[in-house]
Every structure is written in structure tokens, then in C-alpha cells.
Length: 352
Image 1 (cartoon, rainbow, N blue to C red):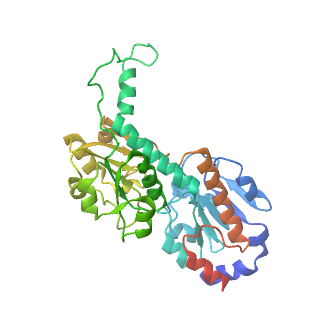
Image 2 (image 1 turned 180 degrees about the vertical axis):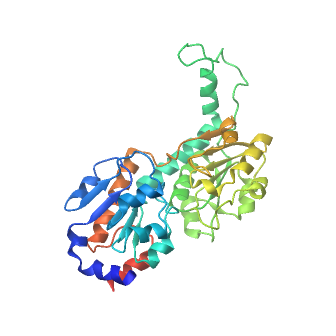
Image 3 (image 1 turned 45 degrees about the vertical axis):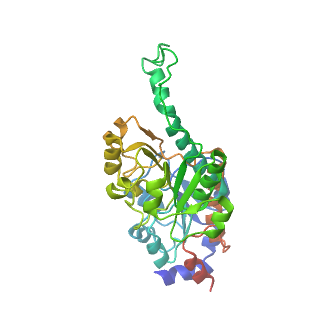
């Protein structure tokens, strides 16, 4: 199968000049128009995630697939699409929805859409969470509306000295689990609040320490000392469920947890228990363990802020994601190295 694909890659004019491309969902901006120039492009008519059956039906026989993180791209799906499939472009930074090994084994290039615009947006959302948790913005907003949004008779009866007290951020300790591009941007913003910033990753990063003024710590130490813990690791076998009953128990009493990475990094049942007991003061989640399904217990907690996976939802980030997703397909099919390749070995093997 791979051998056949390699032959088509170098010699099939249809691949280079008139590719068949399926886009699993409409995306913001006009970048899809660039795909349609000289190609046969179909965009899903459904404004929702496709079922596996729908995905196969629409993508069978295509040369390129532009998918979202809500689409599960398995080896079986790749086989069903056919050996002519050359590139899967993921409209996301993460790619845990794609079986990368299966793609690599089949000689299929996988590209994704990381960029400064996307990373900055997630870092901004992280800080929006931290501020909202500390100052209890969401709780206060709900309180002031509680007797009816349209009646003009909310819960606010006048200033009170003990109403919605929360911790100051100035001088506190921020723990960053995963000091990649996003984690570094979060750390840089902490300087303005005179925070001590601890970070954890596989190995210490002296360059980042010098540039950002951060301090390396083992995970246990970071959890024990941090007033706010924010997660910025990819979802892997190693990180799946890393925030569980045992690790949450090591967190500083009355601290806060923020997750803008991937939902399954946190065992939600254990998080819920810690929030109910008061061991943690609060949590802010943009992603969920069984997304888009959210636990009723989590929804009922007043000390949790939740957003619907929108950490990268800025105009600038979405525009850049569309540009990268489309250019990744165009460049790959025309023999030019795309900007972001997840499985670089496939590209290098193709070019030999």
C-alpha cells in the first residue's frame, strides 16, 4: 500500500494539479477558497462533528483531508479512504485525534497549525482564567443576576466588606506544568504580577530560566508550593490522567487548577471531590475528560469556571490556523515542504 502511494506521489498529475480534498467542517475565513483553485474541494454541509460513517462516506477516495480535533482519524479510516491519501491537515495544535503511527506507516504526511497567534491566544485565556478565579468574577456575575436578568432586580443589595473575597495574585506562586511555547508565554505574563514561577518538564531548561526568570521544580514540589497550577502539556500516554487523586492531594491547600491543554489530563471525578471538600479553592477548565460531555457534578459546582474549548478563539488565531491548515495541504501535494509536519520522517522518505 505504501509503495503504491509513493509511486503516485511522484508521478500522478491528478495529485499535483487536480486533487480531491474533503474538509470536515466549515472553518472561519476565506482560506478554503485557496484550496478550490484547481482542486475538487468538498466541505461538510453539517455544522457539527461527523460520525465515523459520515466521515468515511465523504472522504473516501480523497487525496487530502482537512480535519478538526473532533474528528477521529484512525488507521482503519485511512485504509478505507484509500492509498491515494497523501496528507491529513489537522486544524488544531494538538493531534491526539490522529493515529500518527498509522499515518507514518502508510506514508501519509500529517500537518497541524501551531503559531504564535494560537499560542498567545491560549496564554491569554489561561490568564483570563487565573484572574477570574482569584477575583471570583463568574460567581459575582451570576450573583448579581440571580433574581432575573430582565427584571432589573438582581442579587446585589449594596456594598459589603466581605462579599466575594478572593486572593491577590501579586507575589503568589504560579506552577506551570509543561514549559513549551504556551507555557513560556504564560510565564512571561506573570512577571507583571511579581510572581514566583515554578515550571516542570522532562529536563531543566537553563535558557528559559534565564529568559523568563522561572525555576525548575519536580512535579511534587511544584504542586506543593504553587497557589495556581496551570497545565500546558500534550495528551500522551504519560500525561493522560496525570492530575488524579494522588497528584491533586499533593497540591497546596486552597490552591487553584487551570486546564487549557487537553481534558483527559485531569481525572474529573478526583478533581470534583477535591473541589467539594474544599481542598482546592477552584478550577478553570476549557477542556473536559469526555468532551463534549460534561459531568453533572462538575456543572453543579460554584467554584469551577468552564468555557467550551475556546482558548484559541481569537480572530487572529483562527485566521492563522486556517492559513496553515490550507497551506499544509497545498504545499504537500505540490511537493513543497509544509511549515508544520508532525511526522517529519514521512516527508524525508518521500523526498529520497
